Length: 343
Image 1 (tube, rainbow, N blue to C red):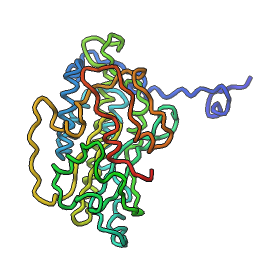
Image 2 (image 1 turned 60 degrees about the horizontal axis):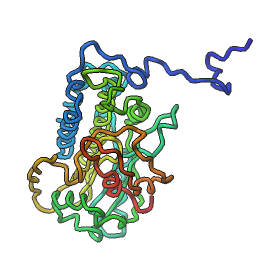
Image 3 (image 1 turned 180 degrees about the horizontal axis):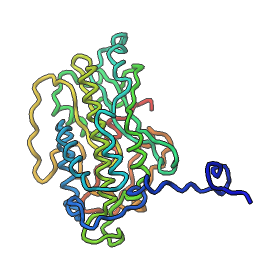
Image 4 (image 1 turned 60 degrees about the vertical axis):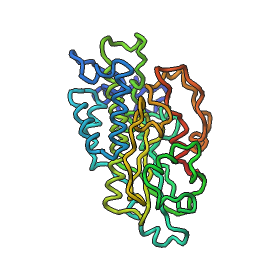
């Protein structure tokens, strides 16, 4: 009798790949600790989760990536799932922007107007959850602009962030046709684990399987999402520090539709940047997100994007959801900001 075990079973039409439990603990199944992790208690209520997320978002938006990194590392201590282990095995120096070293040489041969702004957004293509079994590195949305589209070289950070919050930032659709390409490396394993994680939602409706604490798997997922964005921003900072930007150029960098979305600006301002005054009853990054962040709704409540191309997906406006404690950030804002007109 033929055996379908071992290395040859994958060719049989009824073969089912059973993952190694050691690699999926905390990604597909989670063993709750006897005593809850402190962050499980903080995230139990939606208000506690919202406050934690906005504090971390403000750190990253203000450029304090080292402080955000230290906080995430401290929170990961005591969590024992494989997702937490993947987070711990993804240090900042393992993530890089490959190809950024070619930027200045490419622009030295560019015959068009000087490049004064670059938008760089971290994202994922749609429907990756249905493509299990292979790694999924995140994608980058890249655009290069000149002062013909917007006075980037003289605008301070406040002015740029204000324009980012507009329904249609002035530079959208006016990219310069520069042949430059870069990719982020070192995030494939973490990104793949986050896509495949079965603990992406905390419904707080009695169906989460735990009482008196946030599910440990969800806590690890949330930490992983913010660590992915943090590592990307650290890679962008390192690329700029090592290889530089064109004179007067601003780097508008952020994350798009990865459950840890934000925008910040790197590069010298045309005039001294002013510290933005706090916004009462709103997070300091509220002008960019339009509405305060809220925990994700149940998958069945979210209308999926119907577009098949990346550009269509990013331009599409999501359908209204059932009202969470507060409204979710407008989905298309970051996407409009980072998309390329030719994508």
